[in-house]
Length: 86
Image (cartoon, rainbow, N blue to C red; front, side):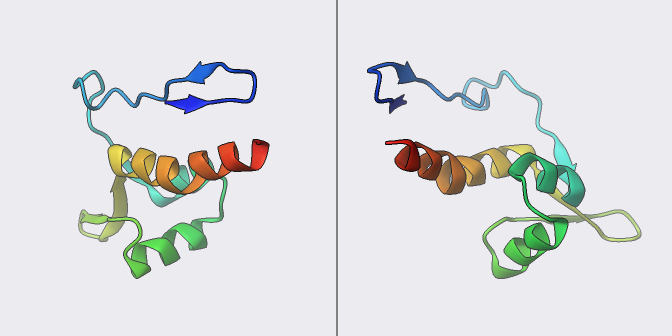
């Protein structure tokens, strides 16, 4: 929950806590689009341990749990956007 300047309260829910959303694995390009960064940035975050990934298939494609990406977004982007707007 975040208070805005206007006194409104924004409640950000991912739905995972109540098991409303089915778990999904996302490829690098989809994570990059969601976070608004280049795919090489996502790979760099994965290599540094900021985002946990899973290698899937014979080609070892990097995949990310949607829940992990949402949590990463909340911790690294959502809170900073709110701070900048105040």
